Structures are given as C-alpha cells and as structure tokens.
Image: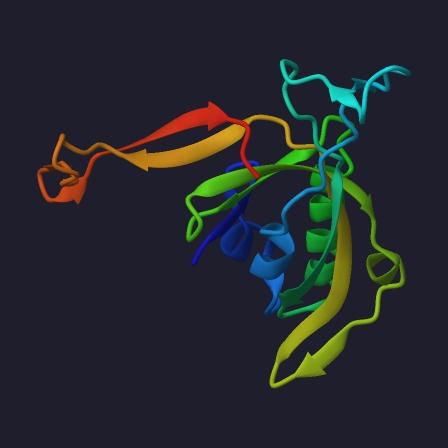
Length: 170
C-alpha cells in the first residue's frame, strides 16, 4: 500500500506514514450543493434545474499521520520539507496506490504539527500529528487497466497494461 504526495513516495522521501482510518476519511461521500430552482406561485412544489451539472461542497479530512527518523535534526528537516509541499497555494496531489486514484487536496492546518512533540522508541524518533485537508473535487488521475470486450485484463509481457485518466471522482 503506497502513498505519494506530488509523485514522491511518502514512506521513502519524507518518512511519513498514515495511521489506521485514512481510507474511511478519504472515501467520504460529499454533500451536493443546493440546486437552482424556482418556486412557481401557481404550481405545486419547486421546479429544479435538471440540466446543470451537480456541484459538491468541499470536504475536510482529518488524517492521522506520523513522521519517523533516526535523529531529531533529521526529523525537523523532514517536517520542514513536508510543510513546504503542503503549504503550496495551488494545493497538492495525494496518490493512493491501493485505491488506484489521486486526491487534489489543499492544506488547511495542523495544530499538532505546529507544536513539535518528538518521542523516542528503540532508536527511532517519531512525532504524531493530524493533518486537516480540504478536497474541492478537482479532476485527478484515476488508474484503469486495459481489458478486452470479455473483461479480461490485457498484459505485456507479464504485467497488466495500466493507464491513467484525468477525471473528477468522489
């Protein structure tokens, strides 16, 4: 199960790991925004706009994470590199290989990451924190496997043929 932030593996590049429950946060279904309607005075009920696409409210995720390192200075460097990527105004892309999709997210905050509280255990220093992220449902990459008309996945030479498509997913 791999995670990547802006095409950088979180485990190898940042030593960033996610706690249990991250999938239940990421797979929440958004609430649609109120559709345009007109309440005609001489008709019963509302006349809703059926032609415009459905627009969803942004979701906020509260994701539990931890950084690990062998030294306190290295842990602080990892924290700074991670914050520089997360704080970009255009947001970042979180790729989840097990789900076969990406999430276009924006960093909202992390009170736990502001107050650095490292812990030591068996030669490893780590710090736990929660990231508050927002998903505006911008188009992201989704993995697909190439299949024939019978649904059999095509492979070459022994690996399945996989491609990515940009689309808006929930």
